Image (tube, rainbow, N blue to C red; front, side, top):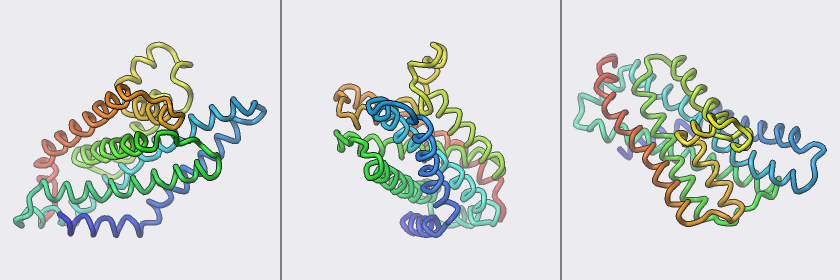
Length: 248
């Protein structure tokens, strides 16, 4: 498992396309939308906008790691790597975990860079850093778990890209990452309760402002962790079908 994790992590860090999706594009979007939505507003209103956009776009863009995950697994499947792995003593759990953990490192690095950018450029508050750390670790677990499940289910890269965009962008809109959730219709507010983006965004905003209560913190962690566990179970269930499609 460690060998797979190190190899995958090395490939990811050398991937310029991944650098664009995880760092360059989120920063560009953050700067653009903050400049648009804070134009002509008071200082207090600008602070509220920034406190929503910085964590909102950070959470939205960590979901795009699912594109790289599906691409990596499909490539391994098509070149015969998966079939060769299956013929060795290496268990399916070790293969999946090795690939999964490497992407968790990538997402945590992405979060660290984007939060540092928000702090240095816009001076976003980080009043409850321990809460923020645990929330983002749990979000990383959830997002990469969803990516793992998606990689086991899709048949082509194009399908993976399309579904990732639906999950990332659709979840961003419905989860209140683009605009405050209380400004949306009641039906959207109800739907948002079933999305990890909503729970992550609300908790991160409150932790940044220093108003996140311990009960709400634990509830958010349990909900996000549950999404990740369910996704991992789905990945394990789908793995035999993924293996059948492997060339070897």
